[in-house]
Length: 282
Image 1 (cartoon, rainbow, N blue to C red):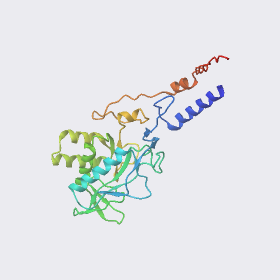
Image 2 (image 1 turned 90 degrees about the horizontal axis):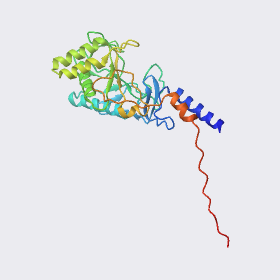
Image 3 (image 1 turned 90 degrees about the vertical axis):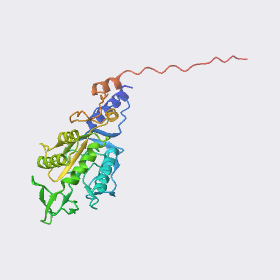
């Protein structure tokens, strides 16, 4: 019996260490959805972004395009919104999201739990004609860049803002960050103010737009990251960003490693003896 208990304990500790996140239950870790942190976790039951849809397309078949369903659906909705308002025929190109089961992706520190997505920038010619943006083009503070052919292109701030606005107004994805270079953030905010967008929407954009300090400046694409939903916390999802006022509030209920050890190593009460019946002899 002791050997079985020790085996169960070792298995539980190994699972806790491998997942790098707290367990929602000491005995029944109901893992599902986005599990763990963006840089240390995995994905269960993710949804794949279709290779091509209305206003949206994969950048490359070599990329991974699985995410939590609400993220995939929000990207599709935002792409459709942009296409409906600016029917240019040029789609939003989407880079890496997550692998089918999450975990580490080459060249990425995060993108492990289905809550991160790389969205390539919309771009135009210098004359303002929309062009396909299926490549990473670095844009400077003036909104100009050079594509792989050596052609000068312009950051399409108008369509980029329409995309951002749709994402910000989507009530299901709970944006935590949109990593983008500071000069491009300034162009987007300036454009939104010039359009007369609601002050609270512009203020929210200013909060979530961020040039990261521990990675590339993100001057060639936007990196969208969404927060956990309240019920996802109890299934293993862990946030590590700010608790923005507009995010749904929840208090995660998880078990610590010590609680897991106590639950598994606690003595098990013996089963009651089977009832016996007396049979009368003839």
